[in-house]
Length: 332
Image (cartoon, rainbow, N blue to C red; front, top):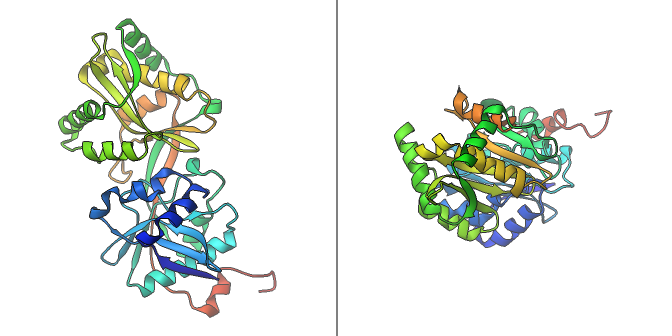
């Protein structure tokens, strides 16, 4: 019923059009976003067809004998159209497993799209990978998420920070000064963790130029007009996601981020009907919780949504045994 094919650049338009109308629609799966770092990954994305019609996508890259649910993305997994059913998704994973096994892939690392990003319920893949692929949960990170329609009030510590920022004359505006923000972010990461942002300044500016309406920067400034903090926001259909958050030493002292998020949540996106997602507060594949970081996010009303990772070994399922997984009738 289903045929699995390797994605090629000739199919970019077909891929992007499918993503736009899928249940997991987000510009992260657009090839203009995925391919900005194509030199770092061996793309191994899959396209699944039914009766010569595109039915699903799997963003992926390959390293050795392992297929990764793309390492350049925070999440991914199977991308499906609204009408795809559970039985069909199970059958797709049977075919995907066969295809990967015959291609020399022995292991799959799979990061499903968290449910808050779904435009329509789409967790059939979680059922299929456990029961068809015998996947094991190998990592679980936790993010902090606010539902706009029923959000909680900010805690007193966050409201106190807002009052402090207002007394100090801090102001918040949308900006295109990614260079200044990146310097603040890079200084923080270097001094605290000895690392650098995942995206270089050039990459961040490139992505903003490709997606100017969905990648936005909001900055906080002191009373002298000097930038003291900011956040890069990714706008998706269901979710407003903070890709980066950072403040300078003065910004932290003045409560700049408290005022910044009060402005974004209560004014900029006040009419949004989905979720505001602060992103992960965990390290080393979820093993360690960054308590001060999640305390700040929870102070705005964020509560836990998990970002999971699964693994399995590819094994073909012989035709005679497929009915063990998918029964066509109660008599099978």
